[in-house]
Length: 291
Image (cartoon, rainbow, N blue to C red; front, side):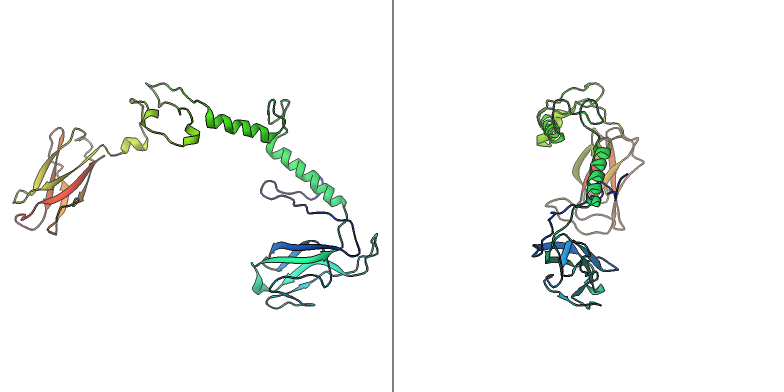
């Protein structure tokens, strides 16, 4: 690999506006950076002319910055320049540890940049990483885009296809029916998309609520009630009971609702109320859910 490589797409090489060198310089406004952890230094996108750097809330010092101060550690007059630059420039700013993590907007004057071999190498690396990650396009290459001249045009066509395609099919006796027209755009699936005899074995639907209702333990000394449901499977005995129901008073008796596992009648189950009381003055209302 040539040059200093990026780790595309995790990180990419960033390229900034390139200027020819000019004695009077060019103005850079509001360049954004975040002060890192140790050694608390940031590198400007371009060289800055000495005495021109301004950061709101911070002051420049010659060395050893305190809180809300910064210093430039690499000020120097360029040794070789085409335009006779005679003032110091630098691009490494050091901050105090107290300001670590703060975001800053930096303005300064730059004399300009030279196009270097390193820049060209970075461009080559970027192109290489793009090809390695998305494939070379067209003419039976890694990523075939057919008659479309660009990847963006191909993705636009694919998006419209997914939004409008009438996606039908499925074998009603063995599987659920596939999505119907515009399912991608509406993002809705209702009962019409599922065959009446669709297999749901091992799915969450298989263990869903089969039936539900309200009932009550009657007043008196019996303290049980027989509940009927066509969905009751005596071999499984999966029932959830919750005490109380809307609009019903509860006398607050301490006790517990429980399924009587010894009761064995098809299509029925028995709910008992266990308490130290000899009898109930008021009914104990409850809800039941079959799974």
